[in-house]
Image (tube, rainbow, N blue to C red):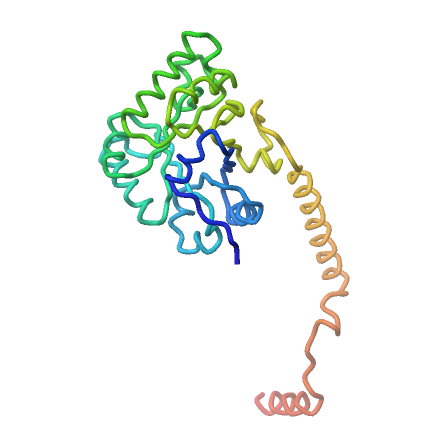
Length: 269
């Protein structure tokens, strides 16, 4: 039985500037269980996983933030609000939402803790020049700060601040009460956020600069797959040469019962 307590919004706000939280994006039950066992503080999770009745059995102490991509919803404020209600009903501690400030305000008015997004925002990166760092000039850094203030005024609890120079994140943190979830934004944020697929080395595609691989599970999975294929090939060979099934893997009928069966068979002709 764990003695850890799941943090509340009040706890997190009280710890601003005093404690660095850890956050992991998990996509399956094994990753979720590992995050709980490892002492991760927070998880970003697919909404269907959070809605599963087993979620809190696996992750009783994790601060859970379901993330819904903007384009995964129909895009209206009411849709997001209904989704936010549903997630809170299933035990979410906060929700990630990159929709408009009007939508954020409506959700915050209903006391749904919302985490927005500033800096590199994949949904809108065409406006900032593609998948690259944002905030490297005083002007663009100022725009990030203004967006943070707008989120704060709209009632958001926090923002993910992505691929922003660490000096900018640190400076912004001094001037906002928002909980800053740093993904490639440096230690000036209040929380360090990575994806499990990058940490575990299961991502076989592009590795973002801010990501760090702590273990190469993809290599291990390849090794396991080779063992699967080898075992299956051995099975095929044994079947073809009559080596399987053999006596140790079969249950034989008693001789007297077989004799009786044969007698019945002959009589039935």
